[in-house]
Length: 171
Image 1 (cartoon, rainbow, N blue to C red):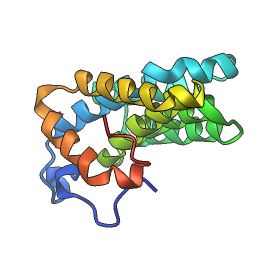
Image 2 (image 1 turned 90 degrees about the vertical axis):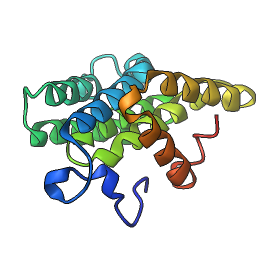
Image 3 (image 1 turned 90 degrees about the horizontal axis):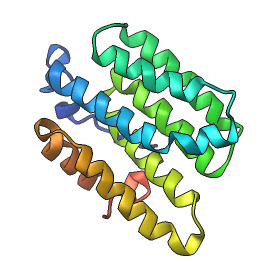
């Protein structure tokens, strides 16, 4: 479970009673897509014919551009996560990262799921003795990709939810 029991109003859109603007929601989605895409090669190396995670990333970007409805991106996320279930290790985590990215259209707080699973993918792809370092490098890379408009929001979210996200945001 990567979502808190109580939803943070900063990740609920204004029209639903929160404080998240549509522009910032789109930025969260694009950042989550970048995190997932950065590790997608781990999935594609294991399952080159399975396009579901790549399509999920494409769908969340299309949603962020206003080209598709939320439900289409959310469905693509579910398909990517289904692709993950039969796998293990880095490939599994990379597919989950893509799925989490795609469902940001539905629940903005899934942005951290995409990032956390991407870090888990990187950690799983290297020998155990290198996993911690690899995870920290990935975490720092992700933070470098954060747009200024959402930077503090995401960093605070990482601090608040680090424990339920496998403590991967200690970088």
